[in-house]
Length: 211
Image (tube, rainbow, N blue to C red; front, side, top):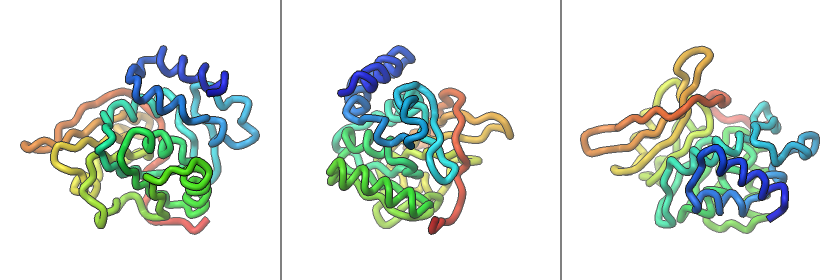
């Protein structure tokens, strides 16, 4: 692990991410790999950074918290909505049995596939150029679902694809200016919602782009 990544993990730990499994997975992933060259000098800061297509690579502490709230085991199949750079995807791959990640921009999906699957040789990952809003019904149900774009509400199609007893973590728009991270646990009596903390994500949009 590089000195920069070690410093980043210390920052994430100091801000409340205390799962050793999550911290070890984050330590195995060099964030600089996913940061565009103009921002490389800031790769190990605990901040969100711009990537291509108007997207961002999330703040590492937020990545850590979202991953921790999933409470993953190596038996879990995970659906990720919004591959982006692939940073979160690669971290998930060290914690879950299999990760399906959906990205609406073709160029982002292609780049993330090259980085995560080809460069890092992760055989338990599929990155698909698809509309994340409809999920992946052919591979459902999933033990865990993580959404890295802000929805107006918990998408019913995704909730339907969550296994009974499963967990979804996603940001929700509470107002025009406020988003809150939400954990949804699918109980026999119905979904149980836990509000976590304020975040800032790009919106969850329908459709795919060939850009």
